[in-house]
Length: 306
Image (cartoon, rainbow, N blue to C red; front, side):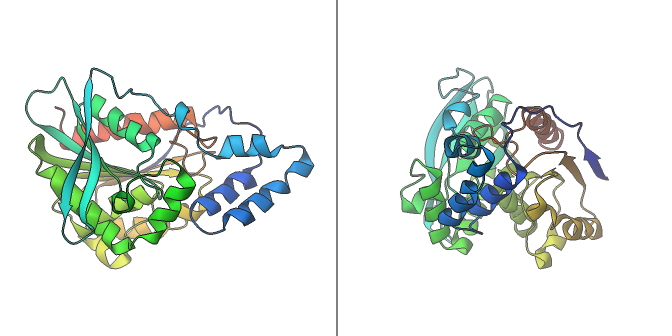
């Protein structure tokens, strides 16, 4: 089944920040421009009446706003564990969250962060996954550097300093670790955001016998030569205003069709890259909730419910 849908447009409450500011932030967050260029571009908007504090407040993350499931929620149990990664950095570490109501084994979901390490938003996503009844595991690519440093700018710099191929191997190792974990029933899903969306696409193509279902949020596809290997059903979540990632979709869709992959693509209108991230001004509450409901339903369909 190959389908493409467009969600109903959300009523958003973002500050009246010009779209180009969100586009500049996306370029900055993905290393296309440096911080000085980003700040200089934002400064041009002050002449139009926007203060720098308002602009930065709308664009930069505020993780106090991101917690939907508390670490102390009695429905979950959260802890950090390490796993072997012989083809990567030797050892990985991640945030393992399990549902307390589940007795015995449950389907598992790998949760993959953006390009800045395991920040509080992604840790909270892992808790949301566990509260929905899955064993959730969110690895931190920055473990070789001491882990997420507490701020995204430094986290982004640290992640870019690591060997990309070894990071990918760490996530492959994490997927295998989770699939065979004593609490897992052997059914493995993966959800990821931005860089994490790419990792989900990569896992589907590189270890097709490991992944049973994938939900990449605004992630670029795996290398073209390996896309033919994909077996797992995919739910592709894209944002209408995310032209950088969306440029890759037509070619990816053609390859998914050629490989006979069961996929669905949802395009969310008037949304920016990162619309699911509730710690920034890019957050679109209505469409983020719809995308998350679809994600959990997709995993329950293809992994089963605990």
